[in-house]
Image (cartoon, rainbow, N blue to C red; front, side, top):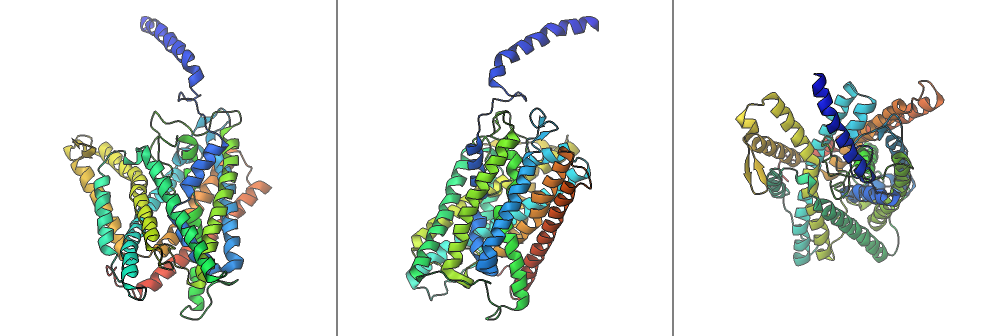
Amino acid sequence: MVSSKAAAAPLEVSAEAGNARDAAWLDDDGRPRRSGTVWTASAHIVTAVIGSGVLSLAWAIAQLGWAAGPAVMLLFAFVIYYTSTLLAECYRSGDPVAGKRSYTYMDAVRASLGGAKVRLCGAIQYANLFGVAIGYTIAASISMRAIKRADCFHEKGHKNPCRSSSNPYMILFGAAEVVFSQIPDFDQIWWLSIVAAVMSFTYSGIGLALGVMQTVANGGFKGSLTGVAIGDGVTSTQKVWRSLQAFGNIAFAYSYSIILIEIQASHPLSAPLFLTHPVRVCSAPTPNNQDTIKAPPPSEATVMKKATLVSVATTTVFYMLCGCMGYAAFGDAAPDNLLTGFGFYEPFWLLDVANVAIVVHLVGAYQVFCQPLFAFVERWAAAAWPDSAFVSRELRLGPFALSVFRLTWRTAFVCLTTVAAMLLPFFGDVVGLLGAVSFWPLTVYFPIEMYVVQRGVRRGSTRWVCLQLLSAACLLVSVAAAAGSIADVIDALKVYRPFSG
């Protein structure tokens, strides 16, 4: 036994010597040295945040009016900025400069809280992923149908109803996702980020430009201080519920805290962070990933706080422009999706370009959200039945990796989300509900609890009390917004026939 140790010693010294030669190129966790700055991190955040949620902001402001709408957007911007700075402090466990790094949101929760809260966080995240898959199916089908309707309006006139069902488009989108879901690590394709960034800025920019053009054509701003008026088909109860739902829509558009750790821990060309709040919650970073933020000094948390300030300010200006110009263009009649509600009819080809961009974006975004969930279930199955050919036997066909279990499970998941979308094809309501349900736990509660543990905030201290009051207030907002969205869904189901499109 002694001789074995003696024999091993020279090998260990040799390995250390090799590491010493490479030390200039490696950081404290053995990965290639980071080179990101405030500006690169800001760019990642802005590109990650801006997505399909921006299309519902005009409707949200219409429910709240000129007085409350912009104020609520600013309030959400402040809360998300503040809780994001708390979360940035939790990138490293213990020491902010030399502590162990967390590479995903779940890693940070596990390092700071552990136990049941890790399981709770995982359950919330996976439920959110399922909801997002449904929402993306609805949004993509609405955009595909809008392309057909825009062409119909152009050919037959704006008074023609040009009716069509969204169900065939949902089935088409689902079929495409079944195929793409069989490609392993589809969410890791490097160029996916670039395509998504181009698509999201394309349709967001077109929406903003059309809003400005319509406002100019109107000869002034539409809308009122208090938003949609009671009467003309809107009851006082509906006004309350829809105002609350607007909070959820704004929260959905803004939420990005869940990917903050990933932005600190993944190089933009190694992992697609740009697909509208892409939540790679449980996928460990691949060996060739590089952190976006270079190693201290200053600490990654300090850099990320500055990047968060820059990105939230930039996003808020862009959101204010999109939401406010959409409301200015259409007033109380602002649609829940600016590019598919047909407030705009011309130029029809520009609407087609915007909606094609949405569809392309969402095809990839669906996989970025769902691949971690697919992988989680498949790892669990492999651990539970390690000798089962049904689970483990794999056939490679080009880019596809097929196994009976993977084909069955992933196809069943896509079919389930497609059927759910066909049952509830209400874009605005689903977006509001997703934003409301995920806002408090993932954007507020866990960051605050992790920060309290990480920085040793004493229970009962002034800071602790203020943090808990903020958490409680945001919980009330989330519950109210969720209630508003659910109430609107129930109201819509009174006149909607399932699968009627």
